[in-house]
Image (cartoon, rainbow, N blue to C red; front, side):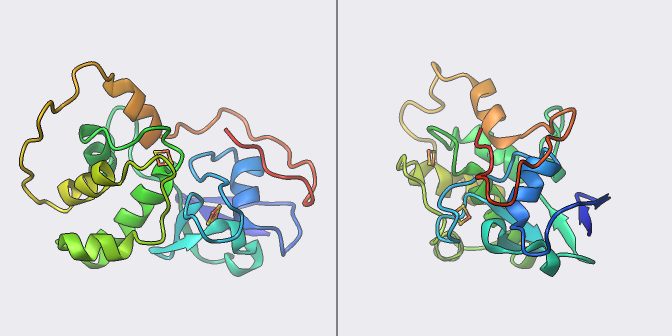
Length: 192
Ligand code: FES
Ligand code: FES
């Protein structure tokens, strides 16, 4: 089955009903999308399919052929982050960083159709993206910054003790050098 991911075609040897997330992570070594709930409820696995935010843990690959799939790896690079990634880095918008893929990809999808959303529109767009760490204030600020809002400085901001590199690693996922083989469709995906 042929998938077009981040502008490249990949011939994938997997059952048609295999979840896209499993193929991205285990066959194509694209670990930006995360396995959270596996039920389409948390948003950690979000990718863009045809420019629309989609939960890759519940989408079979047979529904993705002939469509452009964009993952976190397809945005910016470590040297040149995408504007949304840079906004999340600047706002230090994470604690563990696990939800960040979904937050960034959800923000990308929103800005593609609404380049200057209000705070209420951002909250609406990200309302089903869950953050277990409670980093919502920073995440919404990052989305606001990405949308071009001028933000008031916060007390003790930026936090001098927190390394920007840590946030870079959350917001940017470098593709691994080689793809892993997928153990079997019944096996859970590898989680990093
Ligand atoms: S892992 Fe896909 S929505 Fe939670
Ligand atoms: S920063 Fe940990 S889940 Fe959001």
